[in-house]
Length: 111
Length: 111
Image 1 (cartoon, rainbow over the protein chains, first blue to last red):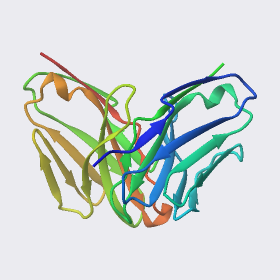
Image 2: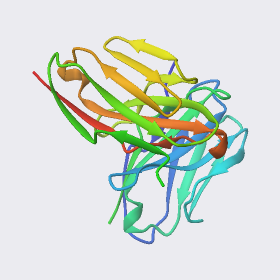
Image 3: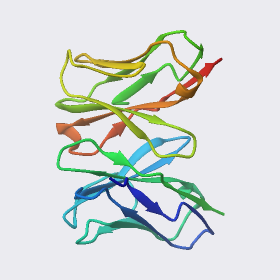
């Protein structure tokens, strides 16, 4: 069974731009969560989607948003990028209350 | 206040030198404790899920145990390929389905 896939794997943007990251969950998994990983803050929860509905949200500004499609694929968007948004963005999928499985991540660099 | 604390921050072992990593947590209503392994530039790879005190799981040279306040990841006779960052995360009734991660333990095994 294919794992979680994320595109693109690497991205370079400049301050003020916006970016959209994509995640395809493991087949049959309906829940998708997004996390931000930085050297200083570690792994922090952004939000979770289940059946196209946001179920939980972390403590991030409104510039961070997401959505989920009917096929469970998810996207997250960051508007008005700041230097501090440089991070590895990880997507994880799970079946119901099971373990979350992570994708390889998207490395975002903001210049 | 940190809900999940991992120690030590870094650990250097000689090949074959067994040791343990610690993960202590303070969340209420634990719904699962998870161990992941993360290699540089990659997404976390799932290792174990533990649900109740006294539970143990094993996989090759790794064994995870759980008490009411902490979990240990025991590494028996480690090899250089076990070098990675080991992450502990908890899911609790207090925080819904999101995972709250510790900062991780960086393990280096020298041959």
